[in-house]
Length: 118
Image (cartoon, rainbow, N blue to C red; front, top):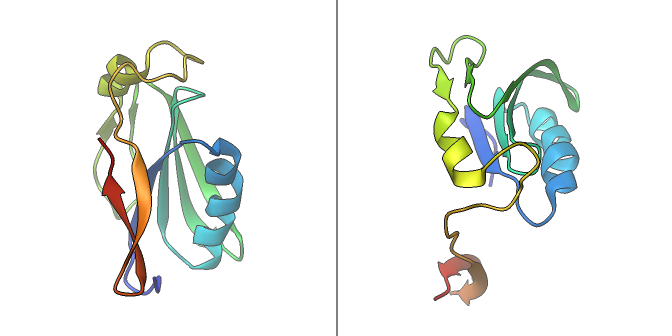
């Protein structure tokens, strides 16, 4: 995927949280994506990384689940993280209380895609 025109990336930590927290953050900054929103299930917090320069973001905002978080301008919204508490539980719980569908990589017409597993 080419990053041109991408204003924001939002993701939830999964099986490789260090890759989500570190490697991807640097990759998105290098690509010049203005905002990276990371919902960290293991740490029970939301991180917003903005104002990318080279391979790092110069603005970082953090909020534990249960508190609101406003990304930097020009995004102009406030993220209510209280619903994340119900999904994950107390800080450090890491295991979601709600079912999360597993995904399996499949090949479609020479391209990789994901599909839900039952």
